[in-house]
Length: 324
Image (cartoon, rainbow, N blue to C red; front, top):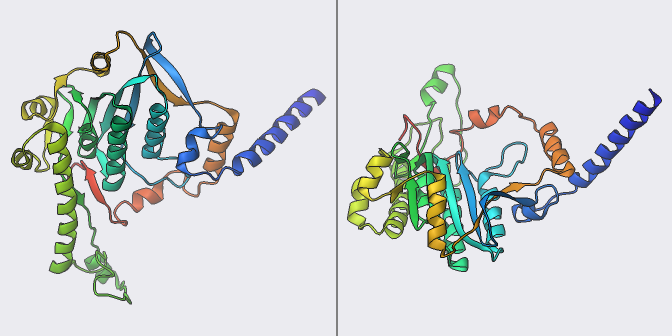
């Protein structure tokens, strides 16, 4: 019994000591890959040889906003993985698996430009493999590829921009709730949910949407070698199946992740290569860091994010059923 008490005490002291170390981590996302709790390790999927084909993944909504626990976003992780791959001279091709409805305009565009930089710096092929959904911002990222694979049933398209505004002024009036905005300019409270949107304000928002939409059209024209007139015809916000997308020239081939990887190997010029995925190393410090963030999270269920979904105005390259 006494021995068990000593073991328990040692574990507690180790946890507290390591917690102090983790507490001291205040680095930026760029430091993430070098942090001992989040260093990347390579997992071999298949193949042999020094040459590598890297498989990276874009899953879920593309967002640059960390949750209440401070967990790195999928865009931060992907950016760090791209940096890691860029510094590895043995990487000869990149396969990007996309299963995403898209997301924030800025976060999507940042990853897109990071993919273009990767191609420019390393001069190696990028092949995209679409999963169940690669719509809106998910397709935006796909345009950076040399070849796009999809399943005939993949949900893609939704080429466009959406900007949501929620208005509850009528409900507020019925409840006797009034908000008075003391503002420095006539448009400082633009988009306020407590009053109707004016025609001028709607035009301002429409201008922002149009700018992002034309940027989306530009990347499709550039990435898919389609005429601008043709892209404008098909980029009306509707979703397409993989079958329809192939007929429209939005994708190149049908196939799964393995077939996309084999195609990447053929584009690389290598005879053989090791297919690799990155994962963050499982370490004691990482475990403590995650536990610390969870314990310090004032909203572990993420309810505030659900409630605030429409409270923060964002331009979105995102497929949202019922809204787009």
